[in-house]
Each structure stands twice: as structure tokens, then as C-alpha cells.
Image: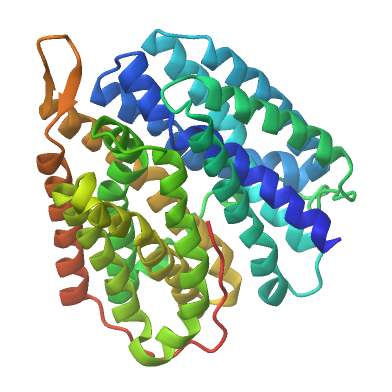
Length: 405
């Protein structure tokens, strides 16, 4: 059973990694979309993350077997990706990928809930299952990079094929009927409103605010790094970017060691500091002799993600009452992957457009040093705000739960 669930996670995240990393390059270099348009397309997943709790709470928890919901969503998703790959006008591309994101983003929660239903001890066993999602992201990134199709729609078609394969595979998964079939659906079951009173605590409020704010400069990385690397002439950029996920796997192993020595506050601060350093590396790095700076910026992803987002999940699990842990995790997910990345998509697109230039041949170029400096300054502001205002009342975590993404 565990290997069946691991394969499910591998497919699930390979789909996302196949198209999301390189879509900005296709939109910018081939379709000549503006920075705001590229940012808007990158932000479709954020809209999906904000809306998906309602969708998941109604369908999978109360109406249908989780397997069937996954099959339908991935089949529709495969069709929408094929349609998106044929388009060249921004309104149609945006609308199609928004519809796709509304189908795909709920499947992240659905696959996690399905896996946890079929293992005995989720706290101990889920991490070893979920890590295969990161492996799937790495594998597909290496394939796209080696294929040399980053500026084309081929990654979308690859994602469509993987989505179709995932839909077929989900048919073979064990039955997972809804647990709340006979209970009445209420809005509070889908939206984490009941956890809002936890924000009365200063440290929890500061953590929630910092989580939202750090996702604004974070979206510069997700939306524009591949375009940046391709524009400055980095070969096999998509393949090189998988170094970030590889470092993520390594840093996951270091979390318990650092917890004992740094505690929650300084691990969270280290995660935010890594974003500042990453953007400094991108601002001043280049191909040739300065390629090491680009490599460093990429491999810092492990600290950037694990030391803030994973440690943040552990902090919530420790601080929130047991009855509100799931709701509070949902609230932070809404603030980060939803609202924060949505704002970041808009702001990053605006900044990229501000520093865009067109040469005599009509080819668009950008002042990437200015762009990454602004992103780094935003991350630095959040870091200072957090260090000054956040106070950790406990020095250790009794039962850390690790996860990768």
C-alpha cells in the first residue's frame, strides 16, 4: 500500500513540476506576454489554493469517494492543459489555466487525505510517502531540461499526459468513501474561520503576517526564475533548477538537528534570510565565472522552503489546540499559497514590466539586477519585522512533523 501511495504522490507533483516551472519562459520568449500577464498566469494556482478548500470540503468529505473525485479532476485537467497548449492570446491562456488550476489545486489536499486514510500512523509514515512528490518534481524537471523545450508549449502537453496517467492510476487506488456523508455541510467546515481567534496571540499573529508577506517576494522566484536563467543564457535551466528540490530533500534531514540548537524563531528567520541571500545571488550572478552564484541561489531553496514553511507547519501543530490544528493549518495555507502568492504574482509582474526593455531587433530583455534587488529588499523587510516582533515561548518541539513540497 505504501508504495502505491508513493507512486500516487510522484505522479501528483510531476504534473505540477512539468509545466509550472517553465510556463513563464514560454509566455515571455515565445508568446511575448508582458510581465504582468506572466505573473497573472503564475497566480492562477494561488486562486485555486484559495478556492479549493470549499471544493474539497463539499465533494470529497461529504459526497463522493476521493478516488472518483481525483479521476474526474485529473481527466478534466488533462483536457484543459491540451487546450492551453494550443493558445496564443492572453485572455484564453489565462482563462484556460485558471480553470485548470481550479481543478488541480484541490487534488493536493485530496491526495494527502487519501494517503493518511490508508496508513496507520500519518505523523510517522506520511513524510516518507510525501517525499516522492518532490522526487517526481525533480525527475520531470530533468526531463524537460534535457528535452530542451522550455520556451515551447511541450511541457504543458507533458503535464497533460501525466494527468491522464494519474487519472487512470487513481482508479486502482483503494476505496476512500466520504467520512461525513450524513452530516450537513456548513461554510465553517471549509473555511478556517474558527481559528482566527488564535491570532489574538501576538506571536501567532506575527507568524501569520510574516507568512503572508514572505510569499510576496517568493512568487518572483516561482514565476520568473526560469525566464531569467534562459534570458541570460543558462543551458538546461529547468534541469539545473531541480537542484533546489534536491537540496530540499537534504535540508529535511537537518530539521531535527537545527531545532535542538536554534529553536523555532531562528529557524524561521534563517529561512527568510535564505530568500534575501538567494535574490542577492541572482542579482549579481551570471554565466561563466559567476555561475556559482546562480547555483547557490538555486540550492538555497532547501533552506528557503524547509526552514520556513515546514518549520511553520510544526510551529502551528505545537501552538494550536488539537481541535483547531487542521483549521489553523488551512488558514496559513490560505494566507501563503493563496493570498500571499496571488499578491506576489501581481507585484512581481508589475516590477518585471517596469524593468523591461526592447532592443533594436524587438527582443525583450530585463534589468534583472534591479528586479531581484527589489525582491530581496522585500524579503529583508519581512525578516527584520519578524525578528523584532516574534517571541517563541517554547525552545523545543516535542513531535516535529516533516513534509516536503
